[in-house]
Each structure stands twice: as structure tokens, then as C-alpha cells.
Image (tube, rainbow, N blue to C red; front, side):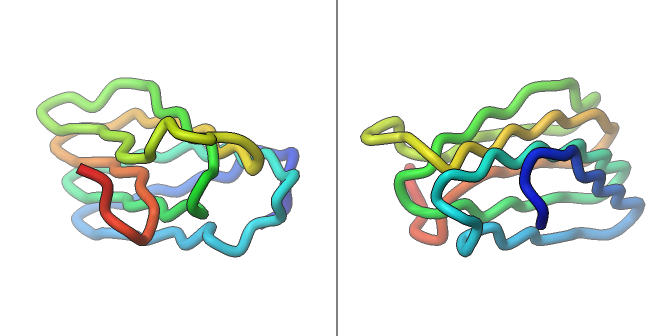
Length: 95
């Protein structure tokens, strides 16, 4: 994924996993996700900073990235949808 521009992901009655674990260390990635009766999982590198905002009606959004030493790369996710879910996490699950 190229850094510096917004990327869109739409899921309808489906799921998608975006693996960003190999994104450049200094990159800033912006995602706009739209899950409708679906889910989007975003995997970020260990130590990356991540932000999630937006609105999911009758669904959920979560950011399970440790705040410790959060720095570049930076992944920003804006999510709007219904009956779906968005989860941002590292490969290693953080409670």
C-alpha cells in the first residue's frame, strides 16, 4: 500500500484482512473501511501507532494495539458501517 493517500475497503456479507505488518517504518497509512454485514481486520507492525474512529451501527470497532513505544508507522482507520466489525491489532494478540 502506498503511504500518504487514503485507501478504501468495502465488505458486504464478507470479511477482509489487511496485512500491513510490512509497511515502511516511517509510513503513514490512512484507511477508510465500510463493513456492512461484514468484518475488516487490520494487522499492523509491533510498535506501530494506530487510531480508529468512526461509527458502526449495531456492530463494533476496536483497536488492540499496545500504547507502549507506539511510533511510526502510523495507521489511521476511519470506519462507517452497519452490522459489522472493525478490529485493528498486531499479529500477537494484545488483551
